[in-house]
Image (cartoon, rainbow, N blue to C red):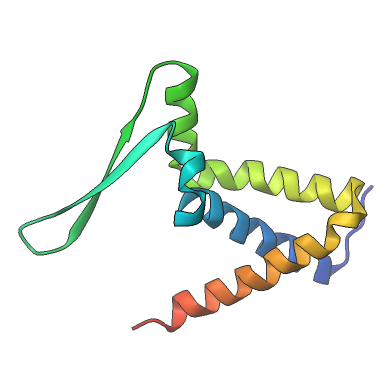
Length: 114
């Protein structure tokens, strides 16, 4: 059975959290999403912005768009990749650590907004 230290598990969780947010939400990775979906915002009567997602194409392209719009779905795949990197490519540990620190910072920042 595979054993993992608690601190490594925390690092993997935070790295997966940050990578998922990077892929699904961050503007810097919009080039990954743009061939598959288009996001627009419209203001409702209460002045709130409502997100609207339009999936492009059919078949595989549409499926990828739906995948990229779902943080739960992308989270499964990023977690899978993060664990594989941790288990089989130890040279990537510094990258996982950077993602984990960024994930912790993003989480703290999101909870400190008012």
